[in-house]
Length: 208
Image 1 (cartoon, rainbow, N blue to C red):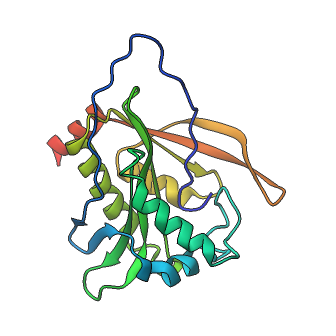
Image 2 (cartoon, rainbow, N blue to C red):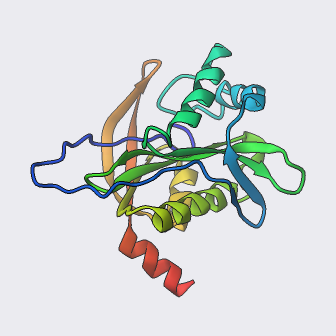
Image 3 (spheres, helix red, strand yellow):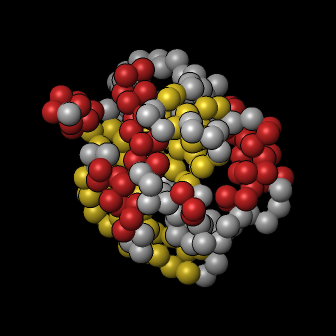
């Protein structure tokens, strides 16, 4: 797992559960310093460079990319996530110069449980600037305002406390540890599980 790697328990909705349809779209969002936008074909080189960086992906739940077609599939999947009602994944640009700095996503949408997962990944030279927190807050705000989302889950490798701090800044609460959750290239690692509920998010916004 890197900055964040999604990990979830895949539950099945029981009988009698009702689902309110959610009309997903891939939005364009702006924050003070960032623009979050849909991915396009022009992002292929940037996303490949990011996802093939071994240092960036040293805590990821899969190996760094080695084939450029992986970037094509990533961009295609980013475009279909909203259409398939699975979530949204957005490229993140710095507003001051338009430079691509990373991506942020909400995925694994479960309409029965009104839950999903937050993920992000940023270039190593952009770490420590607060971009993950800023982008994550924008995605969470959009999801809570435009869907009936109740719970967001995130996971971070226990060797990556910086990502845990990002999640806590966003209001997530550490709920536990999944032992030996991932095995990547023979390396076994544990994951912290963080959760954020709508009521907690609304309380944070009211006090801001």
